[in-house]
Length: 256
Ligand SMILES: [Cu+2]
Image (cartoon, rainbow, N blue to C red; front, side):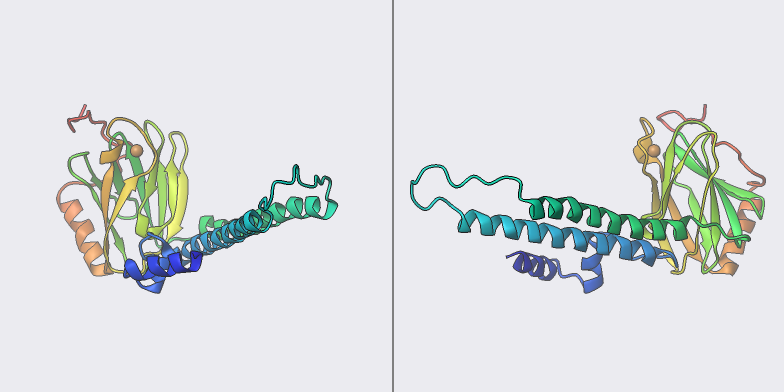
């Protein structure tokens, strides 16, 4: 039954094997993405397997031990030692397996290299984002009404330094998988390496106030030459230096 449901979900949605295994996540667009993808896929497969086993046993018991004739209270049993040991150990093993793989992958993903190719200072503020290209000394800033676009050169490791002048935000590009909170008074950092050309969308994933849902931004993964041309266009437009904090805007997008 479960197999049939799985197969029909697979066929009816018309998606490829990889799409199906990702369960709604986009295809990873970074070198590190497949680490999270496999953690996610294997976790839900394991969860479904355990779920199927538990449901299967329950349904078996419903039918096998149902009341067949009215013969009073069934035999009462208690303190089945092997069973008690089994249901203490089984969840422990499950949690340990999940914890070990999560620890292994998280350690790899949060490791910082000695020399990232370049560094982008990301400022999440109410209600948009500033991208400071720290090596080049240029910046891009958005408003709730006008999304900023972050440019990244392909196959180059970028370090994001996340800061906030006001409240907690969270920086996420779904196709990059990795996500990190942007916390006032702290500088959170992580690195990734985009490895697919294209346009992506990013968003704030920490409910931060009235215009949280408008904290959207775009990402362009481009060639080194296009990246440099874009940085030059920022410099030509006078967007030079570092904006330590974003401009605070009201709900209408007016700078205060
Ligand atoms: Cu937000």
